[in-house]
Image (cartoon, helix red, strand yellow):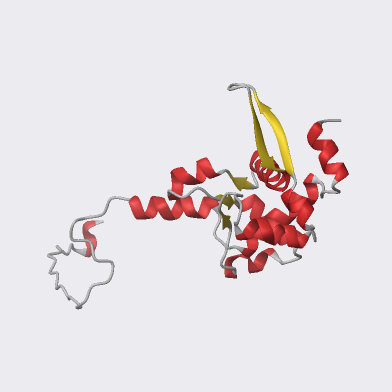
Length: 181
């Protein structure tokens, strides 16, 4: 068993699947986007409260060796577990990773994808017919919005004309005799 696995077992931390499900539900509750999992972030404490983690479980530090510089790196175990769960969800295409979202929105956030959105609705027993009524934005919808915003427009483009304009068109039509056929 790995060092991280021993720490998880010793401190009775939730499983990856449980954290993934809680993370998806939290994303849904935060309108489809959350920031990174750094100390002091609301989402980190929100999910910890969901699992009723005590202070020791929230603050336990995982020590690992950073081989490139041959030094010890200390990181909170709870944050690492959240990151691993989010990364696993990104590999399953249920959320977009911060680097992918940054290219789209210029913000480093985890964002629900359409399939992640459908998965959360299934967890919460919400019918998919109500999906369009909910204020959650997904990665794919944000891509379409950005494409529409960045699309080239005419210089004098006004989607709503302020005054009505009526144009009269006259056309000259030649009428043929019935016997022409």
